[in-house]
Image (cartoon, rainbow, N blue to C red; front, side):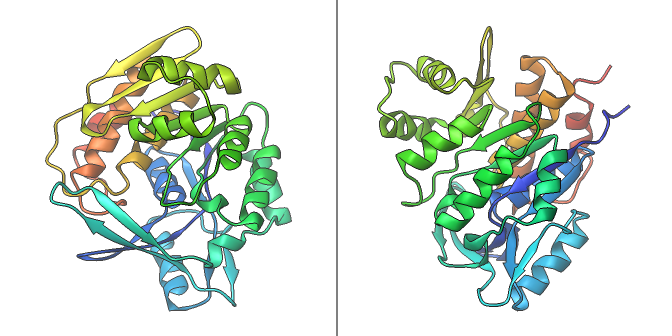
Amino acid sequence: MRDAARTIVGLGEVLWDLLPQGKQLGGAPANFAYMASLLGHRGVVASRAGTDQLGQELTRKLADLSLDRSFLQFDSGRATGTVKVHLDAGGQPAYEITQNVAWDFLEWWPEWQRLAAEADAICFGSLAQRSPQSRATIRAFLSGARPSALRIFDVNLRQEFYSADVLSESLRLANVAKLNDLELRVVIEELKLEFGSERSAAETLRRAFGLKLVCITRGVNGSVLVAENESDEHPGFPVRVADSVGAGDAFTAALAHHLLAGSSLKTTNEAANRMGAWVASHSGATPAPDAALSEILSLGKS
């Protein structure tokens, strides 16, 4: 039997990933919301798109994916976001992110205030905070959430679109932080903290910002979760990678799902790695559910 459905919000950028094989819905918050919906929750995209053709196509795509799009804002004066994605021989992506697009101008609507107050989990990153307006809106949204809500800062450093101020303020507003092993070094350096080992750096970050959990991902080599009184390390699952776009967002969605369900750290880590590996084995960030998903959904069930 599934856990009760929760309201899980992807807050920030929504866009089209322009991949070599064609365009795919993208933006970490949208990918996260989709994966949360596959896990049985109400996945909500809180973002902003243009009224252009790409914006209309984006709305239809969200409907096709059965995502709640009632909190998507529309901007008649700015384009829908796009990102050119270049894949290397191993399927690892590099990004060219268009600037001054609709999601750079998120507005603090009364509807968003109500959504913030009812959200069980909110995932946000650093990229959507590159503009002052969207940064202020994201801060207001997080400040409007219930104290019990999960507030996951999925760091997602992209190009030059971050700063020490954005990182420190986001960590203060979060209660869970997720970042990869390369980002950990950058964040520790930006915040002028002591690195030591990877695990000690994660604990330093957790203590410095009063976080419940810090998650460090290592791509195909798994992840480590560091909580106040325990930690868990997982080696990852071998997979034939189609591309890794969205794999981290799938990991984060499974992380949120199991944290809300009260699963053990070990179960949470295993499920998150399985979800990430599943997406990496498909092209694009929003693959349709298939038989391989059932094993992931069964983890943590009695």
